[in-house]
Length: 134
Image 1: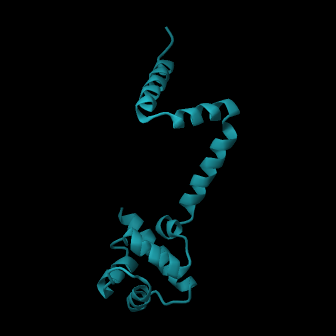
Image 2: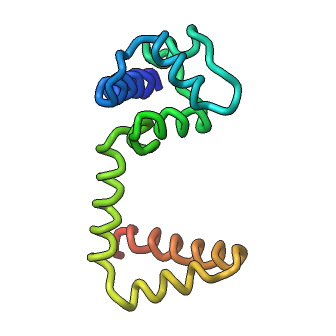
């Protein structure tokens, strides 16, 4: 978690510089409070963001992202995570057949109680497949 906070602070400072602002608490406090319509931030609060001590709430993250013209997920998680997720999604879509896709779509359309039953059946078969052959 501490590493997440430090990485967020680094991305916030970089985004401020890229947008033409000095990454200083006074600048961040002024510019943020001009744009945020919720509770304003104190100088100490934004300093904690810049030093990697705390993370902003989602509403404050959205304000920061809009102001700095950076996608909120990029500011929060960096560019690597969304790229990895997108690559896994592409790999998944390429690797499954039409018949498998049809089964997944049918499963997703089931009511929750039936999904639980199907899940348990699949997990039981998977456990059996891992057992050594007799």
